[in-house]
Length: 633
Image (cartoon, rainbow, N blue to C red; front, side, top):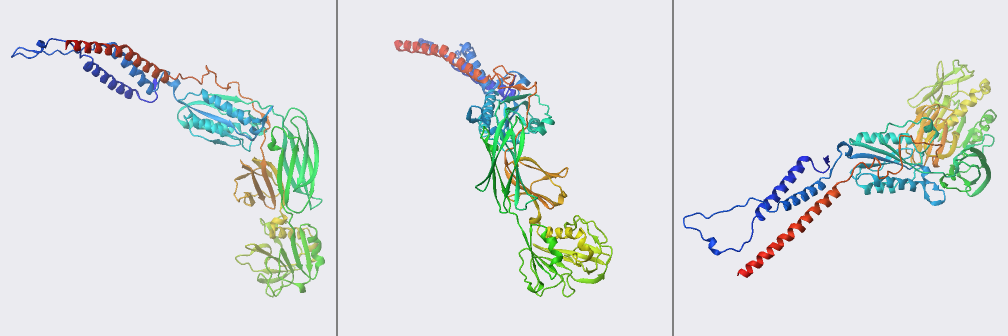
């Protein structure tokens, strides 16, 4: 046995004080009686002491016993006395509510009731069976485990947390949430109670293949029937067409989550203009893809819709923002345009304009290329100098070298990416003096012959030779070098952009180029930096809420509109050892018999019985005594 609100010493001390006070009152009060006697009894013999008679006997022992028992029972009720010892210790339970995106689906036959409503109802039914002395902690379970209460014995706070639970944006990570719940129980320091999962148990294929549940002493599952027929959009991706630079290829993936075949119609809009409709025959549990072509260079919103609508409308619509296809305006001042025209005209993202040197203007809205001359007015913005003259060069020239040998490209730089050729044949080259802000890109035995400088937003590349003349114009190195220079000058124009709409949660973005950690950025629209990991030439990150995320890796960029709900792949089956359903009246969860209300009622009943039995008798005797005194008078 044990007391929850008082220690044994406090209980005995309190009851001892109450019992002593009650006995003293009985000895003081109940031993006095009114009697009609002759006045001669008050005369005493002179010289003799008056006789004193002290009655130390309780005249009504049953009345005292009933009062002591009543007060003992009331004190036991206040102390919350209970039997059972360790079995009835206060226990801590963890309630894991499934708040995955799938909980927003409507149940069959009732469009206004969702799976989340059933999850909440089951959780409240379980809560009513938990003994009032136990504590409960509520965890919201989706892709992450989120506690929404502390250890609470106030059932109103727990019920409020259950009723406020809403579906999230990610799929359920059941093993992670149960492990988190078990760890909370270990840290609470109290007797471990039940860990209760309320939900249908829909998990990803990744988790289903590697399911590892923690060791839980008391595990209960409140299962939810989710036999819902649903088909939805899994992802929408957009990439620039390789055959037509002004066209986007839009790939839409659709999956049937139900057990019957369905005919789904996918529609595509750009802005408010319809782009077409594609019907898809979806087998049970099957997935199919379809491609739309959208011709535009302007930015805009692509909207994909799936018809007919079903019980889960969140995955019937997806939208993504197509970026503007930018073009770099290049003005080339040269008297030999035929040398560079083929290299610049090969890329549709370059709008090249060739002008003679005599028409030079310092205006620059993209890139200026100055071929073997130095203008009187210095250029602004991004500039590519090709074999500048020794008169006032942009970078000091140390010497001029004829037929230099040992041309070497400095590795690990954006300007030399993909350049591996050595000993290229150059007629002549200028060797530059390196300053504190000048970076060498290529050198020969005498020094650097190609340098670069970045000053804020303005960038400059100086080539000490003409790569478009002589034998070097026929080598693969020349167009690769020019492409690297253009990409370094304006990375936003030449970045390979992929746009995709998919679900929140764990995202993996594969890249064919470099995945060096220093060149990777994962950013949201508001500028927040997301943590990421690089594995198997893919950038992996997690987004628990709908967001627009840009993943920049080298010369590639992928934009993810994470607005679709993350869906499940498999149905989890609870282990046979798990307790199931809302606890019945004889369930082991209802291990404690709450005694204090009964003790309080019994104590009040004994006190009331004592008052009825002995209180009325005392009043009657007093009435008789008063009547006798009146007659005697």
